[in-house]
Length: 415
Ligand code: HGY
Ligand code: MN
Ligand code: MN
Image (cartoon, rainbow, N blue to C red; front, side):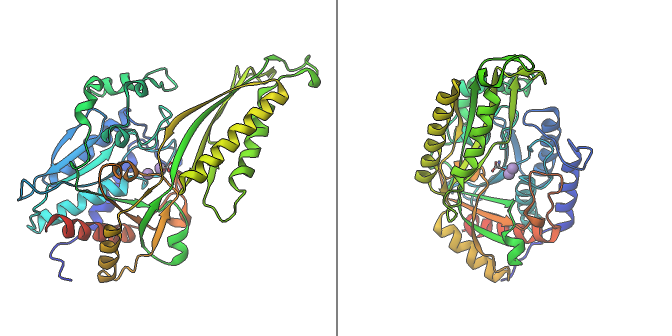
């Protein structure tokens, strides 16, 4: 294959390093919450890089940063590339970043080589993919495909700021978010490159993988309410202690999710808070998150129902009350077979020999799959570690992934 452009691996590494300095934590992680000052600084840097790649840049009313480059054929369908630049609390500096930096690098390398595309291309840094600040992720991509309602903007962060207020403080107009929705047919193809966030590629000795399907997450907020009391005076047999109820439920979740060892079902409790939270107080209530994922929506819902039944049983037994709120639900999605075939053919030509694999992690691509065909490329990351300061991906592997992403872009956008 004659590739008359060059992916600049050094520039990719520099951009990843510079973004990693914004919101850098003491132990070398990244803490960059959506719609925060750090997010604003990161968007300013990415805007500069998008402009250097010849793109016009704008923010839509969901906070998505969009770089656009027109093609030679105004009637050709849009090819969109993207990922995210926000992080989990004290996360890594590659998660999401390599997809945005790599996409910009591809567009810039083609520009520097004087290769014109007939289709228009957009690179998108989706707003709040991770979701920790307002307890709901994949926000910008859910918004872009029309799955966000005004009520979703009323979730507050720990400081009591609503997402609505945060969007306004970012200079956006959430009342006009309907203008930022993309309908089926407006996007011809969506491609995303991301670190694998798992151990498969490293174990297989491969730098790059081709994603065939993405597990769908459902995020729950579970509150167990009992009777607050004095830790020293209430006898054990007279307590209605929500902490013990929650502990019994959380332990059972592990068993419910691992009941079928052949299934990829996973359940995670990542956050728990006690009210009022004193060491000498039997709590009044316990609130915890639950993230359940599966590649099969029927099996995921079956697990969700088993968890709800068990919550009911424990609360009946312990005279507790419970409230289960669905904060976010995204169905599992498959990548388009024609994109998988194209990427497979190109990966052979690039001597990457990329294996097919599923994604246990959620990605913005899952939402774009509701309005267009999608393709995803995974890049090997060290020991599969992610959502941690220890997250690492080699520049050489990211450059290989970027090469495959750019070749795929060329195949679809040059035609
Ligand atoms: O939670 C996820 O799977 C993604 O990292 N946001
Ligand atoms: Mn993530
Ligand atoms: Mn991510």
